[in-house]
Structures are given as structure tokens and as C-alpha cells.
Length: 233
Ligand code: SAH
Image 1 (cartoon, rainbow, N blue to C red):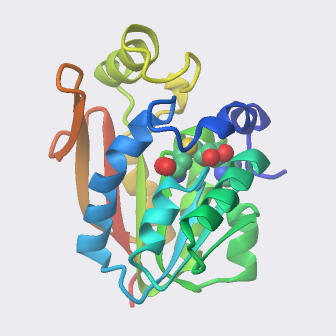
Image 2 (image 1 turned 30 degrees about the horizontal axis):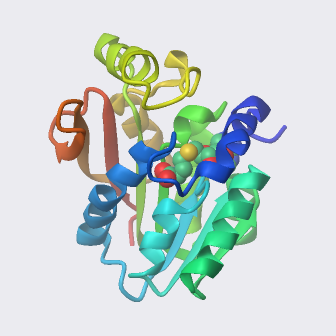
């Protein structure tokens, strides 16, 4: 059984044509992208590196990393977002970027220890068995390589902000984008990462002010958060 929820892929495929519209449902991804890109680059130094972006969707993060890294591979299991990503890369004139429709676990069997940096952002909360993706990302990283995750915390505040606030009040995201039961506590993600053999290097929270409509990185991991890990050399 592949580790995938067909309904989740369907949701992203339905919206795929609007992926690069900065005022669409994907506005939050466009807005947070410079923040996460710089954090990843500060820690892992993308210049000259081979990078894998897991659950890349339409390629917002993948493209931005390709402008700094030697090469980026983006993988996803939703065909339409990948189609959009390929077209957009052509339009952007990026030749060091390729996209593949392949499961993370399958690529891990095919190309273990192939990447200096692996990123897996806003994807684990859409997957039936996220710990399996964490293990596969670890396998895909070279010894000494970096692995980054971001997802949504699970607590009353994240329910209020990420579901009620974002989907119902502010309508930043379509209703049903996120399912509360799939949110992941930092302690759970940390345990999966450690069990996979990663060592935790840092965590950041992502905050949003609906009045200024701005995001910023902080130490508050209560809603959206990022984790940086390293595979032992
Ligand atoms: N990582 C991108 C896109 C996040 S949206 C970014 O942060 O900009 C979540 C993505 O995860 C979608 O593109 C969806 O198709 C993908 N996804 C969901 N389940 C998946 C699975 N089991 N395997 C691979 N990708 C998956």
C-alpha cells in the first residue's frame, strides 16, 4: 500500500492551475516562502548543493532553491501540480530543476544518500503515515546532510488559528484544506526524526498577523513550525 491519501492529492490537483497566482489559495505559501528559504539557506548553505523537495506541489520552494543550489529535484504524487511546476520552471528558464512523480519511499530505495539537503514542507499533515516519510527523507540525505520539515502543531490554538481562522474567518485557505487529527506535535515529529537517526538542529515557529497580513519566523511553535535536522556524517 503506498503511503498516500488519494483525496488529499485530489484537493491539490483541483487547485493546481492557480498555484503560481500569489493572490490565490496558495497566497500563504508564496508569502512564507522567502522566510523558509532563507532559514534553510542559512543553516544548510544551498550553494553548490543537490537538493530534494518532497511534496513539492507547484514548485514554489523548489524553484526558489534552484536559484541558489546546484540542482533541485522536486517530487510529488499529484500529477497536475507537477505539470504546473514543470511548465513554470520552463517559463523561469531554470535548467537545474527537475520534477518526478514518485513516492518518497520508492525514491529512497532507488537513490539512498543522494541529496545534500532534503526539504519536506507543509506535506506531512496530508499523509497517512508521516513517520514513514520522515524515515525515507533520512535515507535520501547524504551522511552529514540536512533534512527540513514544516507542518502544523496539534492543540486548541492551532485548531483555532489554522482551521477556524484560516479556512472560515479569514478564508486564506479553502475549507477542508487541513484535518485537525493529522496535525503533528513538535514532540512527535522530533521522536520520528530521532528514531530515523536524525539529530535535531533547530526549530522555528511561523506567526501571522491578519491585520498587517505579514508572516515572520519566531520561537512560537504553537501553530505552524519548521524543524531542521541533520543526518550524522
Ligand atoms: N511543499 C510545497 C507544497 C505544499 S502543499 C510547499 O510548501 O510549497 C502539499 C503537497 O503535498 C501537495 O502538492 C500534495 O500533492 C503533496 N502530497 C500530499 N500527499 C503526498 C504524498 N503521499 N506523497 C507526495 N506528495 C504528497
